[in-house]
Length: 369
Image (cartoon, rainbow, N blue to C red; front, side):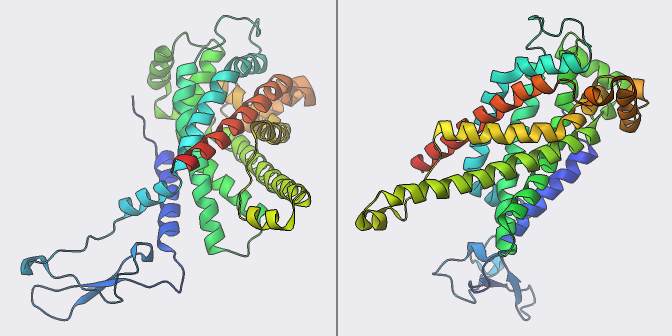
């Protein structure tokens, strides 16, 4: 069943707008290609400007296109969808790498995520083997497209910010791009997460039963139960994760390059100066795992509230404020950090695996290009 909500449409518009801006903003010194469309009455021609990204060296400054009634070939107009597809093409390696990486890390660490959910919802026998992969289908259906949307749009937003604001500090660009990227993907993820967590908490026995019951009892809104809680957890998590990883990666590669150059002769340094260094799988794992741990510690309280709201929001009057007060009243600070150890045990290896596969996939794709 395909569910399209207003939230998803708005988020898609954000991605589309970012892609259009990144495609149509060119260097001010680049040539602007123009062509003329002759009217039916043969009056003065109408000049139409098209994106400079499409101009080539052979294009004249004022090339003209004859009117179709005169038998000429018409230069095609560049519509929003074509610009959008062009933007996707620029980050296709990131999209493919994100899909492969998220699928691998999600499958490898899913049982730990199930245990974490059971602990937070106080399910009996949280470490039971039965049902550890409950809801895996819904999870994959949500996580892989979510990763593609989030990381693909993150790279596009990052490029756009660097182009439009060249003096912006890299850390700020990483943070803003991470926020926009996660918001872009969150509309897709939330329905799958609702179904997945209800299956993990043994509320329903199958994905089909969960989808049908949520639909008949709550409608479309039921699939977006806890959406704002998810956003309040995921946006800070993604900002902390990607900013930490990008900064640590850049710092480490500079350090690695300097250490390598110290051991080289002058001639070798000259030859190697243009060679791009890449992270090894072990280095990706260490940096990714560290970024995941920092992000988890920052966002654990919101993860607890999100889980409780998604699995049984009616018990808290559909209010995350009431839910937070309830947890603090009955369990104190320990309550909002319940499930921290299983979540760390899930996030650290999950993020490490993600960045290992992500970096290796990108490196392979670059070699094939």
